[in-house]
Structures are given as structure tokens and as C-alpha cells.
Length: 303
Figure 1 (cartoon, rainbow, N blue to C red):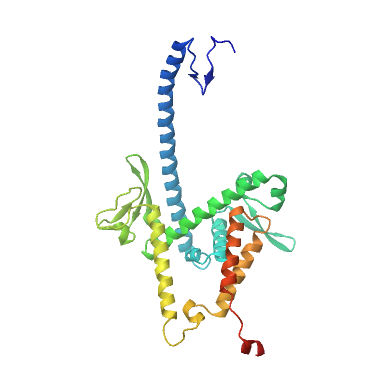
Figure 2: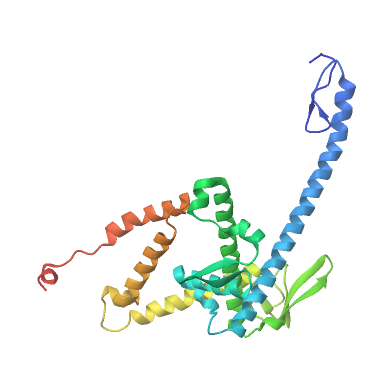
């Protein structure tokens, strides 16, 4: 490249050349303004993305709460705390009610199909796809992980509202100063405080409230309550003269067996689809199992 030619990088920014300083200087001053505009645009996009994320979470929570009210025999949102197959069953029931998937008879089998081909291409994956296009497999796999996480958050938020006797019709979108805002007429006292409704999207708690009016607070309240309920259950199981491991765990042989079987089935269901993180979690069980495996007493062997 000739010495008198200005090299360009990133649009209008010229590399410094002592022989053409004016071109460099003017390009830098212009680029500074352009770069500031890019930052402002990026910030606006980030704010828009966060607002959209909040509205999606709000509407998903309203939707699953409504489904739980209409189909209590099919949709129990508190199953989200059971994990494993219970959550898988809950997700299937909710996505079916959303009209995203449907059950069809295929010969002698009942299969689950997606109702929209474009959505299927975003979320559906299998071992065959992994062999053909691993990058596409990973993309869809991660999309499903994000979907499952967002569903889980919606279930937990709705659990908090159910506990506070809030029905789906009490969740309303109102127009705020900066766009649509989710509001809840009523709600848990930890978020409601002295007010009659919760206006979401603020970091500062409402007067008299201990938690900020956010979707994250609804989720946290559900998780905290579940932990407290579990602790109380363990305390009750540890009372009396029975100090066996079963009493301390608050779990029968049958219940423990179900939990182990659920883990086995979960691992088997992911065969060919295990992520690096899943494999890491499975490997983390080995030392725990080795340390926890009880030694069978001689009298037990004779029996």
C-alpha cells in the first residue's frame, strides 16, 4: 500500500499516518461521535430487550396461572419443585395447552408433534440431528434449555401468586411512562406492602414491602417458601424415638427408590444428548455415592 494512502479500520477510523495527519485526525473526531451513537443505540437495545424480557415473563406467568385455574387436575404448578419426570410432565401439559405441541396416534404409538414448523426448527433436536449438524443441534438444545428455564421461572412466580390467592385476571398490562408495565391487583404482602396493587419493574420496594416489585421477587418468594416447607417436613420426620437414617431424611425406602429411578430415567432419556455440563454433574455423583454407600451388616446378609 502506498505511503500516502490512509488505511481504514472499523468504518471511518483511519490508522495513523504521519504523512497525512489531517485525514487521520478528522477521521478520529468523526469516529468518536459515531462510536458514542453506537453506544447509545446499544444501551437502548439493551433496555428494550430487558423490558421485553419482563413482559414475556409476566405474560407467561399469567398464562400458566390461568391454565392451573382451568385445569387443576392436569396442571399442578407446584410440581416444578419435584424435579425430574414431574417437571417434564408439567412442561408437556403446559406446552400442549399453549398449542405448541399436540399428541397424535401414529400406528400403534402416540407421538408428540410440533404445531408450527418454524418453531420446531428452533427447538426440536435428536440424536440424528447431532450426527448431521452438531452446531444446529447445540443451538436447538440451548434454545430448549432457555425455554425450560423460563417456564420454570413462570411456574414459581405463579406459585407465589396462587399462595397469595391471586387469580390470573388480576394480572394486567398498563401503560407506564416508558411503555407497557405489568401490574398485579393484590399479591404477597412482602411485595404489596401498604399498596393495593404491585407495579412491576422497580428496584425499590413499595412502601411497607420487604421485596422489590419484580418478577424475580415472585420467583424468590416461591423458592424460599418451598425451602421452609422442606425444612419443616424434615423437622417433623426427625421427632420421636426413631433416629434411623430414614427418619432423618423424612423418606421411605419406596420414596427413595422412586427418586433413584427418576435419576436413572433422566440420564437414560438424555442418552446421546448429554452436554458437557451434564456429564460433569454425573461425574460429581461418583464420590458422593462411594462415600454414602452403606456397608451391609453380616446379620443382614444371613437374613
